[in-house]
Length: 290
Image (cartoon, rainbow, N blue to C red; front, side):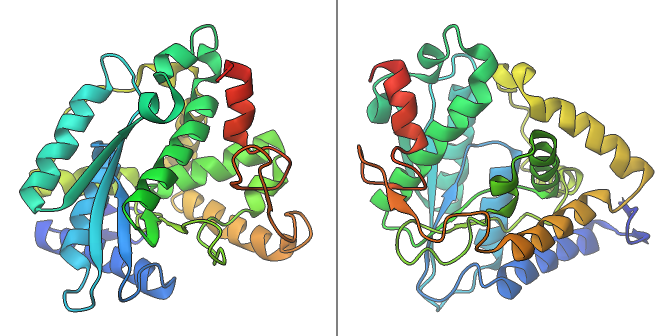
């Protein structure tokens, strides 16, 4: 594989070693995982979360009492989620990793498909809010100290650009991996410097590539347009996505303490940490009448 940014041509062996080295370095330099951590991996069954679980299973040292758990969220998306859940179950069974599955119906009283009737254009925003809450609940139930997600370099760069286009400075300044003083489980993103293409190649070389359906709601997503735009820039100007990530880090430092609230309050309905009177989930519940 030719890495355009580095100018290196890598064979199968050295490509896999390169991916493992970079992920291990990200974990080490950012102290994402430490001895005695119980790491809940958000496993959708798709390519990114599959690669994340495989890499952590390969890389995490034994003898430091670090434990991996996989958690899967069933949003209730007809014709889509069943296949990915089956893929997640097969992978965790093969690796011998504890696996928990939790559904929107159990947590919020109905499926995502039901919540989105007449609101399809808001699909990603609504799903994102409910899914984050579901992941936190599943991680808490599993006794996790860290919540690992499969966000890759493309995802992270797309998020930066989306927040710039929206003029959303608080989101640009937010860092979900900082010490939360026990208010919430820190989220970590070990694949944040690995590109989507590299993840796909890694899975093919590991014989773990599966053709799975795409979420039917992606056609409404702004991210889909941003993805196409950013991919074009990255092809013409290698390193564009990494530069966006570095820019976010600088913005976080400049805005520390001036944009985000000095301390989080608590939601008046559920008690969860939030910056206002109500958290986003409770605001949605009011909208849905739940």
